[in-house]
Image 1 (cartoon, rainbow, N blue to C red):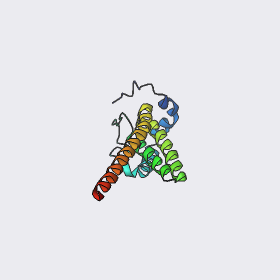
Image 2: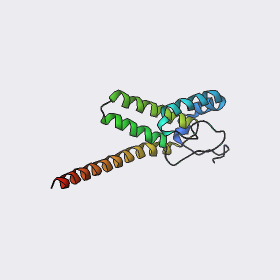
Image 3: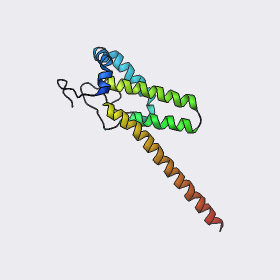
Image 4: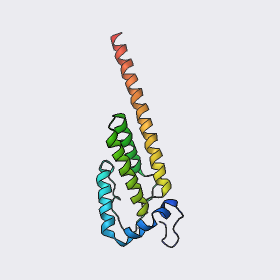
Length: 143
């Protein structure tokens, strides 16, 4: 838990200072934006999507951001370009909200983007290996 009296220096926090003041003074708006964020990442729901008072939920990387990157990459593979761009725009808005509410540090969000690319790549390699194994097994069955 980071005490309010000595917040960390974070460029994302500096950039979203006004949004943070607005959300701090308007809990209803904060809750609305959290609800919209929850709808966006419904496939990655979390118990801390909604504001839970003065409880820290800083993580090393944002799983919501990573999941959104994976969804965007998947839409690109399927050549659903408009949906991929929609995911990207919503992910940026989600990142701004998370910085504004102090839900993540900037590094958490950047690491989430990287984790999304990494996990998507690993999943692709896993599927490729399984496909090759299936082809090899099918060939051996005919021999």
